[in-house]
Length: 229
Length: 291
Image (cartoon, rainbow over all chains, first blue to last red; front, side, top):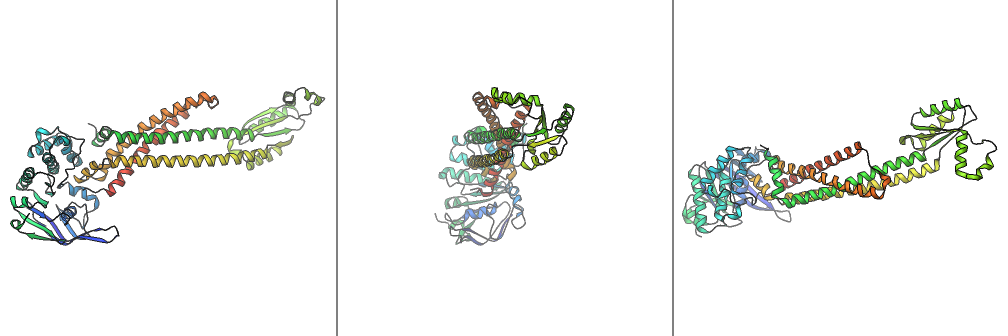
């Protein structure tokens, strides 16, 4: 389902020399799995996710996700890969000039769907995240937790195989964070592959699952119960 | 139902009214400047043609000859290639012109009609240069009953030199204005696109192709260009009315020219909006980071 083989990622420093972030990383995640990706801020969690949605192409190695292979795919295939992924960030990235319905419908229009099909799908996912009654509200009229629910609705409206969540609760109070986490775990239970990057170990302990840690530019598997805040 | 790109493009005005107004204003200013330069160059060309025609007049002085022969020479001159019009000036007419020019003092010369009959020839602007006129002079001089053929060569050379210099200066200023206008429009559109980076990022994040991202911006750019060209035409019309009130000699152009100019301005506006927005989004997409 998700397969990273020997992936190395580095970014250029101002003097032009490369700063390695990940080195020779191997990851295998099966379809329908829930996996946490932990590590301190700046350890390379986001870089790993970026490689998965092909925002960053690895310097070495290969990434295979949702049937797309970084070695063989063209740049013009990347949009079609992203339609099979749901991506959620810490900052909500909602369009402030569109209401909840339009923010979610936006992702459907991109895939070419129009009319009633869009309306039905959007209403369905809004009810899944418990926001159908607020579909006419604008982002600034919603709480942080509600905004993140809209982002999750937008991420799942295209029925993706994989959900990549990069610190999805980073901006939220613990109680609201728990709600969002429950929502993501609900998606996993419904069959979606979920990879959640976080540095909030409390979340991992609350809902334990397979946990990968980024340590010294490598990925290692850790026992979720052993994580200390 | 309107296609998505058109709906999004139109709603872009409402969503980002400030940047839409800024882009449209920049394009209007650019089109007014370019339009005025075009009109000035067209007027300068008209004046230059008129001036060259006057300076490039060829006079064919005839020997003492009968009216029939003079008339056939006149018809032959009129039919010569490059000749726009010819005017036969008889001995009597020449004398009359002389009298009008010199008044009472002219009577001293009127014992005989000493001025020869002549044919005044005006040539097409393309023929008004020393080489072509020399060929015409050689042709006319070879005819029987032609005494002498002349044109004002020194004045023609001077006028041509000055006109060439003026066209070069005009062309350079026009080019500078055009480049400055394109620069202004390109930067304004780029800023307008940058102001909507969140929308572009989100589109990319949910799997929009680059062409899908570009379409609404192109539609918006085309509409802005269309509005800008109509505003520019209105402003130019107002300027024209004011200028003609002070310089009536400029007159009003014919309907065909107005139509051509209007269509050219609208075409330029649409093209400017299209190319400007397409280019700005393309550049932004090349460097956009999703997070």
